[in-house]
Image (cartoon, rainbow, N blue to C red; front, side, top):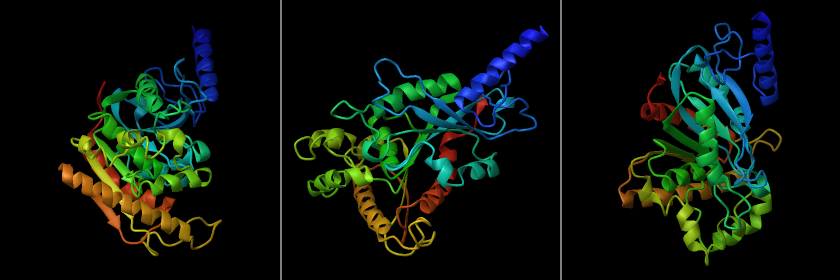
Length: 343
C-alpha cells in the first residue's frame, strides 16, 4: 500500500510539473487542482497555468488556449466552492499581463478574507492577432466561443467553482470584452467592469474604422477580419459593440473607470521606464477612450441601465492606472459575488 501511495504521489507531482503549477508539489487528495503538498504550511494564494483542451470545433489556430488561474488562500484545505472573476487583458498583452504588471498577487494575499475568489486570466490574442473577444467574421479566430463555452466548462470541471457567481473585468480591449460578453450573454455575469475600455468601437465611424485598419499592425486594433467593414457590416459591429448593446446590460452591475487623457493624474506621468517620463501617445489613447466611455454612459442613461463610474482627471493608457482601477472595483465586485459556500 505504501508503494502504491508513493506511485500516486509521484504521478501527481509529474502532472503538476507538466502543467506549470507554482509552487509544484503533490495535491491534497480532497482538493482537485491544489498545487501544494502541505497546505497548512503554505495556505496560498496559488498561481496555476494550464493549457485548456480544445474540442475539434475549435482549432489551436483559432485561439491561444493558455490560461492562468489564481486559487484563493485556503483552497487546498477547504471543501468550499468559490465565485470566479475573469480578468481580461489588452491588445498588446497576454494572459500573464495582469500578474506581471500589477500587484495582483500581493493585493490578493493582503486581502484574503475580503476576496476569496478564483481568478481566471485567459489569453485573448495579442498584437496583430489581438482577438477582440469575438468570433471573427472571416472565421480565423473563435475567442468568444472559446471563452464562453470551452474555457468556462474547463474551469468549472477542474476547480471548485460557483459557476453562476461570475464577474468579468478587463482593461482596454479587455474592457471592451468584459462589457461585450456581458451584453451578448445577459445574466451570465453578475458584474462587468471596464478599465480604460474601448467600449464604443463605432465612435467616430466611419473614420474610426479606417484608422483602426491603418493602426492594426502597430496597436492590434480591429481590421476587417474581425467584424468586417465598419460601413457595410455595421450590423456586425453593432452586435458586438457595448454602446449599441447598452440595454442588454440591465441586471448586471456595471463598473467603468477611465482617465480623461490630459497630462497629470494620480499615478504620475511615467508610463514605462524604458520609454521615459512622458509619453504623449498614452495620453492621446486615453483621451479617445474617455470619449468612448462618455458615449457609453449616454447610451446607458437613455436605456435606464445604472452604472458606477470613476472618471478621474488626467491619466494615460497604462498599467499603474489599471492596477488602481482594479483596487477601486474589487469591493463592489465582492459585494455582488458574495462568499464561498460548502460544495
